[in-house]
Length: 588
View 1 (cartoon, one colour):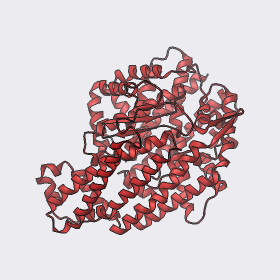
View 2 (cartoon, one colour):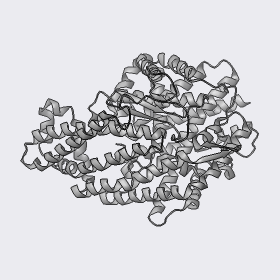
View 3 (cartoon, one colour):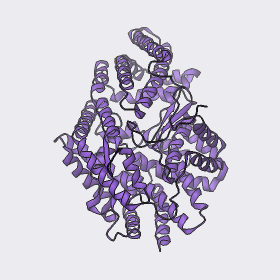
View 4 (cartoon, rainbow, N blue to C red):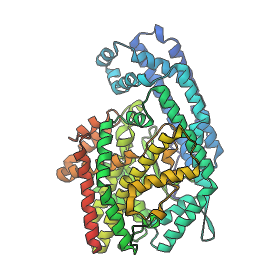
């Protein structure tokens, strides 16, 4: 165990960009890419069974090496966006992997045309373990382009959407906020939204808004360029829209999304009721100002050290499952977590599974508030999900966006619900319920606004280049439609399109509704846990394990849940509605 300094330990991967092991792995990756190209050259002469075995073997080698290298470069870059060596390594890896696009496409086209594929899967024990992977190739083939077109897309993406995304990360991690005469990182300024002093919250919000014009033009160029690339690629591949592509990639039906969004829309007035009640309690008569959205209430103003956060989580998780408890203990003690904000480090929080080590790495911007403990629980939930799929081949470890938020949000519900149960005073209970409603409002009300905003951006991009003013206008409209009179209109946050990195991906559109899906799905699973007790835990782990080899509807059926039924989503929302009623009653 390395000495604690608040930063993660990446030595499980490499000791630096110049590490000889990293250089050797880059060379091995090049050899594997060469082998992949040799396979495609001989594909027509090879028996189908031999082709499948060789293709799977080389694909696993390429996936294992490229993921290890990419993960290391990305983790280094995430904590120091001025590190051009890390950025250069990512660019080099993208260029190398673009050389596999044509070969991979050619083999996938051949696999998709195999009449004997199912017979081979059934008769070969080794191939049967890759049934989902092989069947997905066949299903995905309808959206594949030609070999040369796939290679071209891969090459162009390096200087296209991927480069624009990196620009956005650099802009938001390096822009400074002038707060009370001091230059602080944007992530640190946004953390002040949770401060107990109303003057601090308001001044930090105003200072944050003033920093965005420094980078708004560049960010707008980035977002316009990324969304246009997505639209063009969708048309060429045959997707009806970026939303249809997102649903397909999510292994989720439109019927499920419609049920989810419909239920959310039905309950939106209830969340506005919560916001207005909170605003009134804080002395605002006509809704809640944006800068007070995360204002702490009750007596939960304690600041936690990292050690206190660790003991808090271990005590709660230990009552649920020993495997989760032990993994979280390792995460703290073996430096899996990069805790504190600093210049050059990206904002927000994320988890990154490290398959080669069967561990994870978690980035957060810890400030000691109870919400930061909940954030840690959330990201460590992702890590627990990673752990459940590490048993699959590396080719079958990736789970789709909606179920990606299941274990993370389940952890949140577990932590906050336990805390509410143990509250010793009305003020503590009020603080905990309000904290949970804060999070729920984000994954329902704010996510709905993000969904509306991204929809409008795609609808407008073909006909116009949206400058910063237009982006702010579309964001204002989306927030007004979602928050309504719950937030005072003149304090809505016009630059949420700039500070949220979720919009800046060429390969991951609509990374918003999965949060609502995960939040409500997790609440449904938590209700099952409350009924079944410890008997639920093996089912929960089996469900998480199945997420990377099933669509979301079939995964949910393992727990007896029909995701296409609006009533299921309304059950989760009604539980939140009941908490809003309890919150309002406590305020009296």
